[in-house]
Length: 459
Ligand SMILES: Nc1ncnc2c1ncn2[C@@H]1O[C@H](COP(=O)(O)OP(=O)(O)OP(=O)(O)O)[C@@H](O)[C@H]1O
Ligand SMILES: [Mg+2]
Image (cartoon, rainbow, N blue to C red):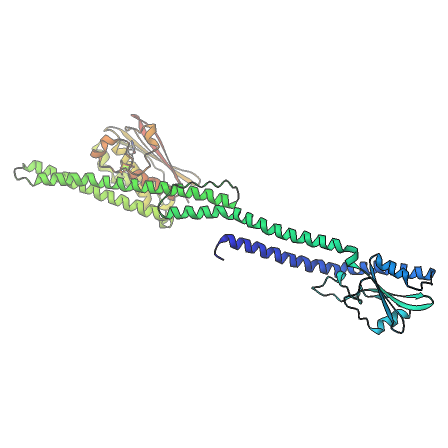
């Protein structure tokens, strides 16, 4: 079975055949266990009517009454003790009856052949045109004892009904098959479309239009698939943007290193100027090394949460350590530092969170004019720690606030060169905080200052 279409079609067909067979067995069983005794009783009553007629009218030389009865839709067999018998109505398909049965009926017994007819799986006993499948009664005609056997002539009584039922069943089956052919096509069509779509995705075309309006599983699959294609498209775009950003970030320091080293090759250069150029070269290469470090950090953070090496440690001590580490910078700028750091323990990755505070605090120092103030406060709540880093610096415009966590985004382009920044710091910060199930908010007003608030779960 090569196609889903064929597979569905054949499965449905098989189900139909199996269920017909099962239905046949079950209705046969229903006849055998429930209808057979009822049918037997009904026929016994009719045979008794025939017997009653002969009790009232014993003379019937030509057996014409039995001919009438047979014309009304019955098959009869009349037999004497000498085993001479006459059939009325249509012939029986099997007409052997053992002597013993005939004798029993002749001597006054009632034969319940319909009730006692053996049950077989494949035969609906009701239709079995067998002399054994009859009711036997003793009757006296023309003063002679007879055994009379009788059963309904199904051919005569319900012949048309049988044809009607057969046509009904056949038509049901044929129409079902036809409908299955079409409905299967309807079911499978969107899957074929989806397959085409996956093909075009694997060949690099992400712009797919899937017009599946269905609301069922296939419809949902199609809509999820479209979403996936869209996000793959975005991913591809952001990947390209990332690569071009990285190239750009590498390109500019390389260009200045190249330029200054060319200048350095000239012989008539005062020692002072030479020193100046060498310092720039050193700064630029340090900047490139910093950039590659940040890129590596981002790449490893993108991988998996399982990379986190969490333990419980004192957050206040960590913040103080970062402030000590950056002391040289804020002293140089004569910034006032305002601290409110009560002891607070936190369960997290100490190294990664160290990078968070370093970036946020160096940003505050970087983007605050000399003489400003930086306040760092820590609040301990039942299951959260809140760290707030506020500065009185240049601030960030509303428009920029929504982009500062993007990779390579720098709000203040003019300052960028002097400050040796890459715009990756806050992207790394956000990533680390996300991995800790925390959140970071920014409040800022250009010219007045900025506040970053980090909320982290303590456990
Ligand atoms: N405290 C702040 N005050 C004013 N602007 C800020 C502040 N913090 C961040 N910004 C703005 O957000 C931008 C992104 O910050 P981010 O830390 O990601 O990059 P960066 O500091 O420029 O470079 P990097 O941290 O990679 O060296 C900065 O370029 C700056 O314009
Ligand atoms: Mg930064």
